[in-house]
Amino acid sequence: LEAELQLDRLKPKLSRRILLLHGHHSSWHGTLVVAPEAPPLCRNLTAYLRDEADFKDKLSPVALSLSLALPQGGPGLVLYGDTLVQAQVGGARLSWG
Image (cartoon, rainbow, N blue to C red; front, side, top):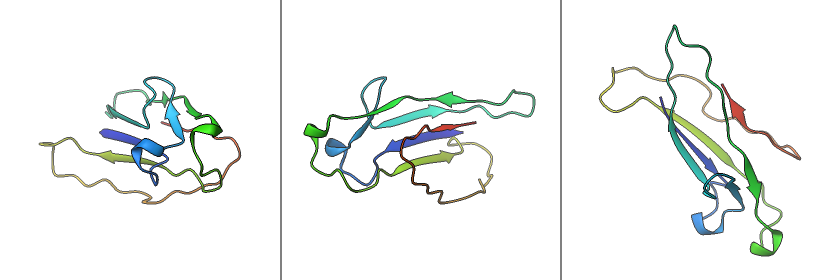
């Protein structure tokens, strides 16, 4: 599966408040290998909130999105699952597996 994580996705790229620790970007792209004989896959990414002096909007929620897609040229399969998952938390740790 091709995976894409977007942090603070409702803001323009230059004004995003959350960045990944590795690379200081607001998005991550990667490939997740899913196979019947493979063990479960877990990926942890550490993100941080930029200094409050660097942005004005301190009240709106931070929206995260994770999209999964089949690689181009793969079999004609359809992914099925929740299309929207929303939660409001004080401190957040995002991981999937």
